[in-house]
Structures are given as C-alpha cells and as structure tokens.
Length: 404
Ligand SMILES: Cc1cc2nc3c(=O)[nH]c(=O)nc-3n(C[C@H](O)[C@H](O)[C@H](O)COP(=O)(O)OP(=O)(O)OC[C@H]3O[C@@H](n4cnc5c(N)ncnc54)[C@H](O)[C@@H]3O)c2cc1C
Image 1 (cartoon, protein in one colour):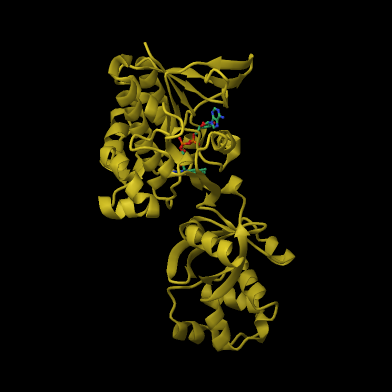
Image 2 (spheres, rainbow, N blue to C red; image 1 turned 60 degrees about the vertical axis):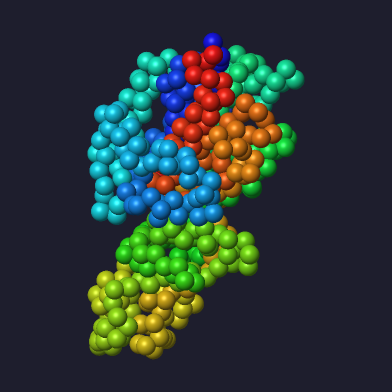
C-alpha cells in the first residue's frame, strides 16, 4: 500500500488526510507539537468563525488577487459543504447577524475531538513531536523527533505547515527556507489581519488594553466601523484588522500611514458642537467631555495626544472636528507573531491545478502557507479547509484510489 505523509496537523493538513483516507490511502499526519490543531483551538476561543454565508462571488472576492487561483478549490468545497461537514461531526452551525457562520457550541474543541475520532476510525495515523526538517539525499522526508533524526519514505507528501503568526502554536514559517532551497517561489511572509505601531507618549501608553468602542476608522477611501484596542505600542482589534492590508501596503510604500478615527461617528458635527458649547462651569475638561459625549479616559487621552496636550486651547468648532477626525500616524505593522494570519507564501505559479509543487513532483501544499490573504469573517478557515481537501484529491489523482 502506498504511504502518504501529511505534515502539519492544522485544519488544512487534517482535511487533506481525510480526503485521502476516504479513498483508502494509508495516511500518517506528522506534527511537531505534542498535540494537534492548536491554532484551530485558539480560533475557537473567539467563537470559531468557520466560514461566511454571503453569496459565492462576493465571498470569493474577499481573497482579492488570489480569488481566481482559489476558485476551483472553494467551488469543490464551498461554505455549504463546510457547514454540512461540521454538522456531520455533531457540530451544527448558525449564521450570526453579520453573516458569519459559527458552530452552535461556539468553540473548536468538540469539533476537533469528533474529527480526530473519525480520522482514527478511517485509519489515519498521527505522529506527534515530529518536526519536519526537509529531505535527505535519498529523497526521504527527515524529522526531528524525541528519538533523534528520523528519515521517512513517502509516495506522496502534503505540506500544510501554516503561516508565521502565533508561532508558539506551532507554525513559524520555518518551511520557507527549506522550500526556497528547492527552487519553490515564495512571496515574503507578511502579517495580515494585524495591529500597527504608533509612537505613543508615556501618558497614552498607560491606557494599553483599553478599547475604543463603536468608532469608525478611515484611510483613503476605506472605512470600517467597530472596535480598536490600544496597545503599549499602537493599536489592534477588529476594525484595524479589516483595514490592515491597505495600511500595511501603504506603509511599505511610503514609510507611514495616517489613519483617521471618528470617536462619535453617529453624532452629526452640528450636534457635537451644540453639546460642546454647553457651559462647563467648574468641571475639568475631562469631566465635561465624559458627561457631554460619554468619552472614556482613553478616548480623552487620544484627543489630548492628537492636540499635543493643548486640547483645552481648542475652539469648540476645532474640538468637535477633532473628535470625529483623530489622526493616528502608523509607522509599521505590529510583529507577525501577533497577527491573526499571514500574507505571502508559496506562489500559485509554483503549483499546478492539483496543488502539487511544480519543482517537487509528488509534494502537495495547502492552507495558509499559500500566497493568499483574506479578512477575518471565516474566509481564512474556509480557504484552509478547501485547499486541504483539494490537495488530498490531488494526491488521490496522482497515486490512485486504494493506493494502487
Ligand atoms: C487568535 C486567532 C484566531 C483565529 N480565528 C479565526 C476564525 O475565527 N476564523 C477563521 O477563519 N480563521 C481564524 N484564524 C486563522 C486560522 O486559525 C488559520 O488560518 C488556520 O488555522 C490555518 O490553518 P493551516 O492548517 O494552514 O495552518 P495551522 O493551523 O497553522 O497548522 C499548521 C500546523 O503545522 C505544524 N507545523 C509547522 N511547521 C512544522 C514542521 N516543520 N514540522 C511539523 N509540523 C509543523 C504546526 O505546528 C501546526 O500544527 C485565527 C487565527 C488566530 C491566531
């Protein structure tokens, strides 16, 4: 019987293993960590946004330039199939008010447990604490294991090693060096859905961890409502992630980008001015702003920072204007280790229609290690599952069902 090695036990690798095991192929999944699916479990802490319910074409458009390259894989395993797959594992899903799809349990652990049971029943073997290091001269895969360096021969391999964010969960992008040595074209890994650095004063830094709620961010012709979290070194949070790719690319081009924050986007300028013109009496400016507009201490600190400490000297009109147009100068992305996902990776030109590397026949790739990015909203997991399934089918097509 032919032996297939899947390396990386995240959603993409496990899905590839499942597709192959269903065709009767002997599959072993190798994973460097002592347990599987750590990033999937981490995603579960935020409710596990599995996919999105929007129509197919707008859905595909979320992958930007990579959409055409992902079309076939997502067509073959679309959001409805992912939901049916989850339901078959006992985890039915629902559509949230934003159109995002979540398992009713709002976590990943029951889904992963049921999935591992099913994989085990279909004969998939797991080899944990196996860190892939490349190939030896006999073209066998090599692994660092607690027992030392182990070579393993495989008839086909699926690499599903993830991106480079949250490296403590197992994916650190170390594979880029191994594959670059084998002439695989790889776009540099970059943070996606990430935070940004801003040069905060000591005073503003004290508000790290505080949220700016129900604000609106704008950058050029992009705008996003939502929440921002202040960090020691800048900003992060859902609204920031949604603009992250344009901000990242603007900073790469110009060295900086100025983001504009509307702290009270639902209050018209005239109404803002009216409230700010009310007599302050003996109240401090902070107290007055807190009562007149429910501005929180962190929001007031941000305004102070933008006014260079001279907030009290602003006219009512200028203060009203600033409240809905606070500029924040961003100088860099926050480190990739803190990003939700990774942009860059193996170029689609480097693989064929079955996700096999052109430079390494018999080696297939899937998941976040490919060169695509997408916003949060379930698009990340959907593409990982769909490309994992596509790579699995690719192996079946190459070595034949039943491992013949
Ligand atoms: C905090 C957080 C929340 C998220 N929430 C969501 C969400 O709600 N919805 C969504 O769509 N996406 C979410 N994501 C993103 C999503 O989890 C990832 O896109 C997805 O897990 C990537 O799947 P993957 O299989 O490609 O890689 P991974 O899940 O990263 O799995 C790759 C595996 O390969 C292993 N590996 C790496 N190198 C080696 C090696 N050399 N040898 C052996 N094994 C190796 C790793 O240990 C890892 O287990 C979230 C991410 C984070 C960080």
